Image (tube, rainbow, N blue to C red; front, side, top):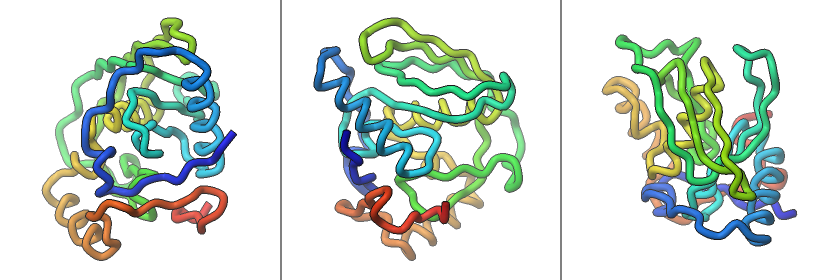
Length: 191
């Protein structure tokens, strides 16, 4: 297994819709193994293929689902997500802040749907489905967005979008070519 560099905001693969996966073969199995290895090294909870420079519709996750009281680890290939209504109002800094491996060292509050159902297939092409709530629903929405070419910072409200734009200029997160290697480079989130 290989730990891949995680590309940073501004890399073109992050800003376009990922392509459907057609072949469920040894190459895909290796990609999934590499993604889990990269996720573990990054101390993250989810990782989409575009974040490692691969424009394919696949993401992996490994996180606690506090509502269900279980740890979930898995993969979605070619997923479809259906979400409940996003609540009105301003996002809470304490309860709704979100970060991203492709926007290192930053986090901003964002309103998300409380409940989602996600359907797709696993790495062998077998159907998989989850209906989840709370923080785990946030993870599913975040990773699904990556496959649509959207990062969470693209969804921020006006106030937080201004703060993001300032931070983006400060950190240089607007040019292609930036990446960091989990397990080798300093952890940008301080884990």
